[in-house]
Figure 1: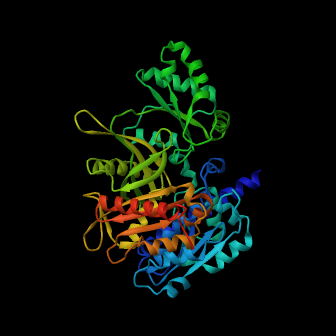
Figure 2: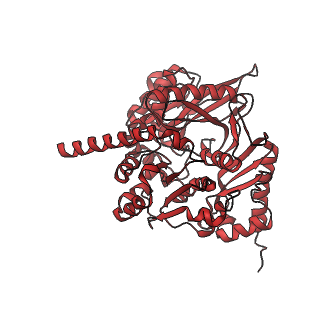
Figure 3: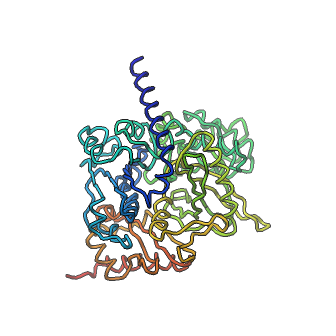
Length: 511
């Protein structure tokens, strides 16, 4: 046991040394669009694997990072991209053809694709660690003094891979993961004075959860509903709604039992979830109860930022999230930017959270989800819900916009401007999903895009960029980002894609 602890301690120190090296190299990495650098993309969703099973076609989400290929517009950048299963060649070609002013063959020569040939439910990073020869090939392909790794989220697995490859990871140390959980987020909100809904402490069993929920109800007697959350759930899939109205007449001393009995009737946001399964996860993941924010006019905005190795906090974007599920808890997509009536205030609250995270040693991406409820006086009440200490569903559409246009985000307005000074807007989704889309191959999608002029036009810097194309045939599920010069134009482009796909899969297709 002592040897194991020493080995773990030594590995943690090696990881810190690599991150120190990253900090010393930061100037070169910050300018990678004009520098000479190898970027190793590990698009692994290293999240709880039982929770991941709730997402159809989960391993295809490794394709969301394919926007990184646009970085090959810099003729000296090399990109190493690893996936669980091989990428369809046409999907790779699609992204390389988006590069302005770079010969296709030149970009392709600087792209190295590796694959674990493993479609199991394990995370991609674990699959790589299980294959020493694959790690050797990656190590041999990279230039150690000019390389860094990027990932979707940083866990002990990514830390181990970074150490074994000897390549620094551009992400937070996994020791900081707690600050991206539901309870960790609530603690940070309190520390930096960011308003958030009343909620419980973290608990590890159903009995304590019922007691904590009763305490919350005691503090907030007018509550109609609560949100019960698995502490390490994501995308709203680990949330459930507790309706208090059926037990509103219970005396305070009866409420713990009444709430415990009501757990059987929770309205789960993930399809097919049950209390038996949900409750079995509480000892593993923890859970909290949180006040459900009611409101006639209510939106779910978010703010994204990053912390650079110098400790500086940058605000990158704001979005209005598109939510679905039984009670609007599940992330489906987003609109950029967030509504102008609250996006500046949103940025300031996000910056406060970022400053707190920076002091704790966090690095790279973070996002903060909010609820915005319009008050009778016309003002917006902003309540922080949770922190995502990782990349998220808003990362890839924004980075696609940034890399395609080479534009800039202006914090004073909360708008993104192209190099010509024109504001840009988009609508994006990971969940354009219909049964009728099943069976469409990437080749079929390319035909539909070309025939109906749905592609992104680098001249006008408008159009739609597609992702999750590998998910389409089996699950009828597709991702896209529709970019326009106004919010209305972006919406129209998105709706055009849906209309065309519906028509092309109407059953009237003939050879």
